[in-house]
Image 1: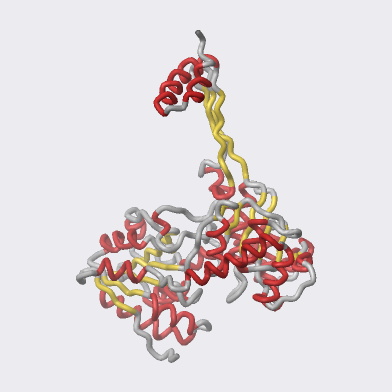
Image 2 (image 1 turned 45 degrees about the horizontal axis):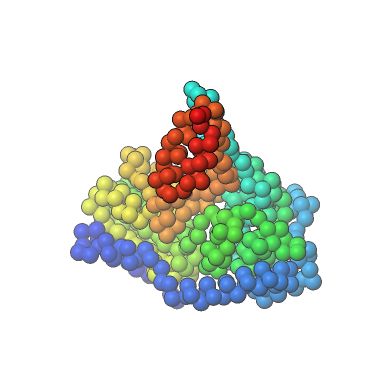
Length: 441
């Protein structure tokens, strides 16, 4: 496939049928979904029934990794520490800084996001409140196929530990036994308790159901491929999950005042993840859009993952001319992108108009990649327009709330009458009687 010239699909918001064309461009083909789901169901069923035996079989089949026991697939904390201590100096320093910033952000989030217990007392002595407790055990899935993601370790494990999760169990595929030292070092630094070198739907199944060696968890978080996503969907209910993550996305809102090379590279930053990743530019300036197209073709041959970027941009990218920045914000809210960059002279002015986005990056110097690695906020974000109703991964994903109710004798006289009336209205006489028996005659 030639890298000489590619032409990214252009749209104009003023064209007839623009909205339908845009929505069609946002959706992914679903032809493979049934086959993937059927394959995942077989794997989940096998692991649930056969435990370690199935894990060993699938690890050999998919990761070409032979082991006589699942214990051989576990990496000790001592080995994680060794990986951290032996990192090259610059990598170790970068990992330390990233971990510190991610931890600081989530410590702040814990204070500000209602992650604490509280209660209040009414005049009659009735006490009402909320008890917040962390999950006991969480599983984190870290991709390990096409690339290694130490940043995903930090983003998943650190907020869990900040929330107070007692045990974090990590799974990461290591095809043919290739272990990435930076991933293991990140696990050590983030405080991961146990690490197993397994991946795919079988790893999700092990975390959900437990095996003879791998403990079951209360919630599974972290991104993965289509098989991992299908497995998470299947086990939801047995365990909690964070979200069903689709291919990565970036949407750039630009007023035409930015450097076109920077914008082109920002579009590349998501396109290089996957052939199905989506990169979109919204801009009112037709000449600037053309400059970005020129920059794309100029810069693409320099990229080590050029073929992946080319496939992504050719199949799924959009360069969209809009009437003005106000309309760009309206369209951005309809797209509800995972990553939203506002490359404009006054980015906060436009950020005020954004209601739906996983993360908002404001200003020409705020590249999306800074958020991926070290800014501090979490990079596990809602995709496929789910930012309309969901949020980034955070401390709040690793806690649960219990309502606290202590009704006084005086309070029972008032509330008992209300409950009795409503219970009789619903035809639930035992409910009514339970309240009535506590009323003073």
